[in-house]
Length: 508
Image 1 (cartoon, rainbow, N blue to C red):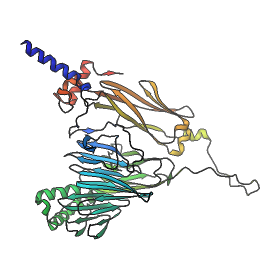
Image 2 (image 1 turned 180 degrees about the horizontal axis):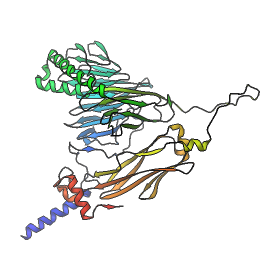
Image 3 (image 1 turned 180 degrees about the vertical axis):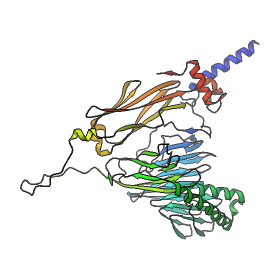
Image 4 (image 1 turned 90 degrees about the horizontal axis):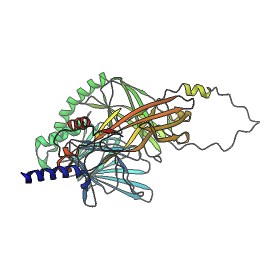
């Protein structure tokens, strides 16, 4: 009996200290969406920098012959090898805003090189699976997708490229790409076209209303599995099955389009800051995708999304909107603008004896400020509950918020922007620091702590606008035997309730 008590006590001690004893985190379970940003150092000379925006399930990256879980906030660079498990997904955004989505059961290597010390060549080697893309018009770069049977050259377009049982599939919902084979054969496809390339380099172009969609990609996988033909999957059977699927899909797509309401708010023709707020009135419940990021339109019918890109990524910015009812999707709108450098001040005033310019009627500054319809929007909802996976002892994330109801040209009417933590100033932005509509403030919250944040934007007339957010970061160590996140006695919701009832989950 004494020996039993001894081992029972030893187990309890090990469970309580596991968070500190483990040296490396276990990969997240495949059914968990990993959403806590994790910042990391990125080589300054990296040619490819793709920021991880979303991770669902188990997504791993290989560096130095070691596989580790890839998390939001990290950056994929050249020579990174990425793989996704079943029911898993990775979304990354390149510096110019181009979005890449790697779905489940895919294996991709990212490569890049500099040509003539000027042009960047970016390659995505698809060893298996697919990559969905929404690529901005390239200025100083060229992007290529490579499979075992073809190379697909991308200039600025949207769709997917994949490898299915020895065949290459390239499919477009927008734009134009060129597909070439090792034998020198080249095929160009455009919007609503899909090309199949077999292991002999022969290609077949299909005109499909479902081209470039997630539904078509899933249908191709289902067809391949149903045939179970391995590398000998018959192209004719695949083509026939895809056409049959597309006929039904097209009918459902047209019905969805008839009932879809979409009214967009225009954006400026030119932008001087690397940020834009997209706004539209859309049928409630519609799933909207822009730059790889999905949002469901609320009951109000008002869609609002702020997107950002690299400070020096000048050029045309295209915001292709995909609308879906969860079954079918279609391109429903496209915003286009130019991101340009801030214009220099004029070199000289007009001469005094020149003809006087026609007076321009302006409003007093006080009227301009009074008419601003400013609001503050914080990402992630009013209350965000985060289960902290062992062995981590604190959550490191970014508090993301944006200024809504105004344009970049109205920023001069702001006096200050302050982030409060538990009622005390945490981060302040003076008037001279207010150069964008979107902000990210790094924050760290200890395990089993509740942190309250408030963002306060103050206009020059003294009027202020506020938004609040609360983080609840929790982990009951005893619920995870062996100190491993994947081991749990009760589910997360019960774990949270037990911590609340015991008083262990406390305000900072």
